[in-house]
Length: 250
Image (cartoon, rainbow, N blue to C red; front, side):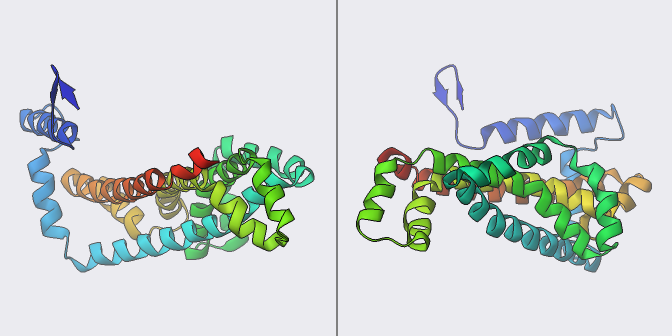
């Protein structure tokens, strides 16, 4: 971040927005936005409470399982779509439909099919993440130089070996980009699932605090959620930069 040609340290923009937040909160313009200092104090107070730790565990469990399922299914499906024209023509319309459709409308259907427990929440989380992972993996395969594939065939690579050693690594920059965006979407999915399907985890805390107008508690939980999503996103962005040379070599 630069101001009048002066480079400011990283995260300076967050510090500036935090100061503005504190000023607005201290001014008392709205009860909905308490001062940031009050929110941080509240976060410190509830951070080690049994209710918060239980909610964090439940949310992390649903998020981790849902994202893992989306990655393990989405990457192979996307690679197969990129290398098989028939499969691509069969699946691509559906992938685009689910990517652009309001997935929240499918939650009642999932509740009927899979019940009101953790399984439905995990499936909701996966559905929010998987489609962009599939599309990015497919796009990465379509960018591969065909000479790499022909070289593998000349050296006797089996379809499985080509899948693992050529397609996956050559498409890795796009795959990581899809995973990063998918994880961000999965954060929305897990909270929507916990609010609509079963009031557990952070969803239950959001409902409790908003219903009782405990706005500092509400924002404290929301900041934790934002911080987790931001940290994971930045870690994956760092991985993208480390593996960007695959795209150049490709």
